[in-house]
Length: 197
Image (tube, rainbow, N blue to C red; front, side):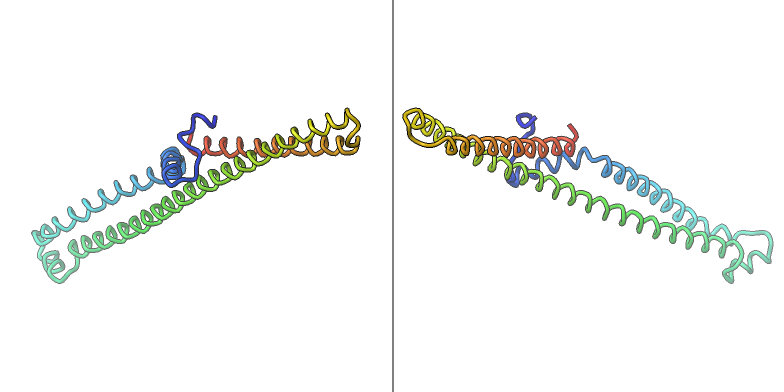
């Protein structure tokens, strides 16, 4: 798995590349984008309705009923109804804009969280890799010491306790090495899940 990821370092380029891939594959961000698109469409329709209602207001002054003409001149009747409709549409527009702003805020917050998660996973991987190298080096050194002690033991030097102690230490180092490898592969697996492969 580690070979096919584009990179596995905490460099800015790698963090940015993996973050972009994770953002592109995030289902939560896709849903937020879809909701924002729906709100944009509603805003467009609402804007068109406001424009239409404002443009047709002059038709309220044309009437064969003199009472309606007087009502319209003094701001009542059809003129009032149209003004209320425009005000209602403007309130709906404000509500839609507020909802869109909240969704955009959530979208940006999710992007930041994804970037943080990618960075933490890369740092975890690097930390586990350094510990893996250190433990491998310690194990190699211990194996060399154990071989020297075993040869010395054959010729009467050293003790059984010394050899058993080295065997015990080797087992503990091997166990720690396996744990670190599990941590590394876990970080890689989480990165895979995050970027959607």
